[in-house]
Length: 191
Image (cartoon, rainbow, N blue to C red; front, side, top):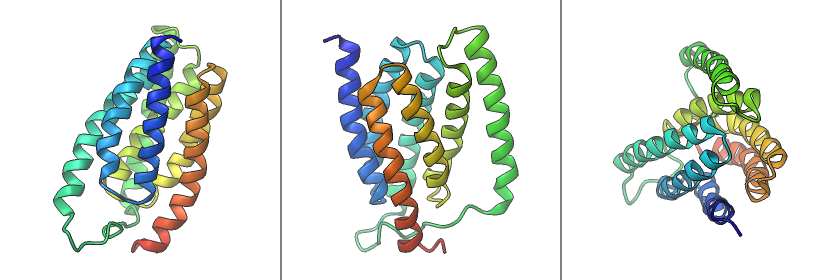
């Protein structure tokens, strides 16, 4: 078994803990997210999906940011679902513009300069991931809706790349994202 496959399996197993902690709105998700990010930076670099690797570098930085932000707001008596709100409408247009611009730029570079095997899929999933991670760090309910789309992309595309443990992990993520949306909506103040 190659080192890439071993690291991929490790990353997908750690990733299952990550989605569990995300579902539970636990700040532990950020610690596990750091480990998962390091694993997938390696895996996606080796499979020539450089923007996915860059996305996991962003996840690594976002995990540090999220850990600090969530821990700062945690107290021993605080419910982990406190602070869940809806994303203010004023952010919709800027976030859509960020997604759109990133998608076009990433698709261009992934196809023209990096010879990505999946340039359009990599671009869309990367741009959506950037926006979704920011929404998660802010504890906005809508992050789950973006993760549903992102996880569908990742599951299908990783399957086509023959990264089967990763495709399976993202299939689980897809199901948990659907469940997570309804749980956070019920438990938080995002109604």
